[in-house]
Length: 242
View 1 (cartoon, one colour):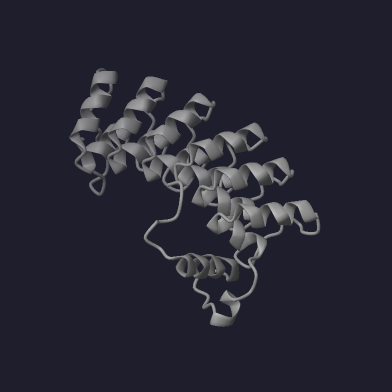
View 2 (spheres, rainbow, N blue to C red):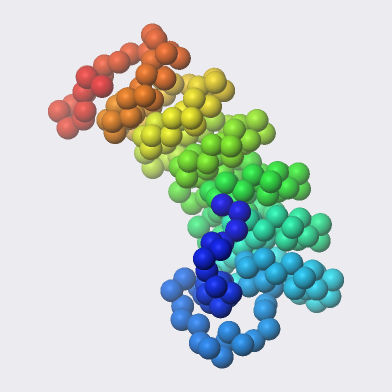
């Protein structure tokens, strides 16, 4: 995801961005649509010259959060405006400031597959292993969204592929296996992740893949680790013989 849909008109984009400024679910009046673009809106809809002017004036706090708790860098990272991200980073904005949900610009870029932006952020000191309020790192976000090249990029950048989130005890491999992301599973296997790790219920990535009907992934894991136990005996309320 690099830009907003081409099918959306300019007023629709502006209305959407102003709604993000005021907070999710907020209604934006026609009068508000007529005002000059603020920095957050300009960053969200890709208005480079407006952002550049705001930066050059040096009158605004470039790290200021709006009503929704987002900074201009967050919008540009999430939506995929490379040049604006680069401009803001050169101006010295903070790269690890999180949203109210704990998501950093790197996580937002990763969740949308914005690889070049993730690269810029890491070059400027973005923390690869920061976790949001649900315990997800950037690697978890792009894995869940199925962004194959982003997963590969983060792995090559040194992301911890064996990290576990606290709610279910999932690893990124488990997330990919349960979601049916075959190529991402193969990336993890090639990277040497642990395949015998169990979640809080006792399931491995292979078990999760079989539970959700992703038999190609079961085959990939079997081919990678033929000695991995295929069965597990547990209480009646848990699945067995997986």
